[in-house]
Amino acid sequence: MPLAPEQLRQFDDEGYLFFPNCFSTDEIALLGIESDAILKQQRPEVWREKSGAPRTAFAAHTYSEVFRLLAHHPRLTEPLQQLFGEPVYVHQFKINAKAAFEGDVWQWHQDYGTWARDDGMPEPRAMNIAVFLDEVYPFNGALMLVPRSHKHGTFAAGHDLATTSYPLWTLDQDTVTRLCREAEHDGKPGIVAPTGRSGSVLMFHGNLVHASAPNITPYPRKIIYLTLCAVSNHITKFTRPEFIAHRDFTPIAPVADDALAEYARAHRQAAE
Ligand SMILES: O=C(O)CCC(=O)C(=O)O
Image (cartoon, rainbow, N blue to C red; front, side, top):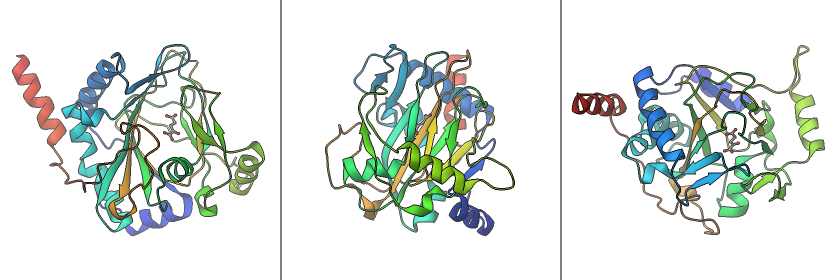
C-alpha cells in the first residue's frame, strides 16, 4: 500500500498514520492463535509483568513461520521503505499482550530515545508499525500519542528500571505537559488514542512521544509492533540481547500480499 501524497504530508505534520482494517478476519485469526500459543510459552524471549502475566514476546518472527510472514509483509514493509527511501531490516519484533486486568503501563517515551542510547542507532530512520490483534477500545490500554511531538528531536530521558519489568528511557512530566499543551487545538486535548478493530494498523515516527495506561478491563489488548530500520542506519552498539535488538541487517524481501491468507488456507485444509 504505497502512501499517497496527502498521507505523506499528514505523517510529516502529525507523526503518525492509522489504517483501519488493514488485515482480514482470517489473517488476524491466524495471528491471534499463534500469538496466544507463544505468550503461554516459558522461554527467554517471553517477558512477564511483575504479576506473572505475559507482557511482551520478542523476536517471534525468528521462531514462528506465521510471524516471519508478517515481518516480511508488504502492507507493513513497503510504506516504511517508501518513507526512508531505501530497504529496511527488522530491528525489533514484539507481541505486546496488555493482558486483561494485568497488562501494565508503558510510561511516556520516544522509541528512538531507547534505540539511540541503548543500541547506538545513528538517526531516527526507524519506526514502529503496529498491528492490532484485538479490538482496541479507549479503555483497554490504547496507545496514546502526542501529535507533532516528533518535531522536537530526542528529549532528555531517565532510565526507568523500576516501574515495570521492561527498562525504558522515559520523559519527565514537565516535558509531556508542555508537548500536550502545544498539541491542543480547537478545545481538544493534545493526545490522540487511535482505536479500532483487530486488523487495523498504526505507524508512528520514532520520535513521537507515546505511552499506554494499564489494562484493568476484562478485554485483552494484544498489539504487534514491528520495528523497521533503514539498512544504512543499522545499530552500532550491542548492549541488549540479540532477541531484543537484532544484529542481522539483511534487507527485507517482502512476501506476497496473500502469504498469510494462503498459509491460513493451507493449514485449514490440512486440518480437515
Ligand atoms: O504496547 C504498548 O502499549 C506500548 C508499547 C510501546 O510503547 C513501545 O513498544 O514502544
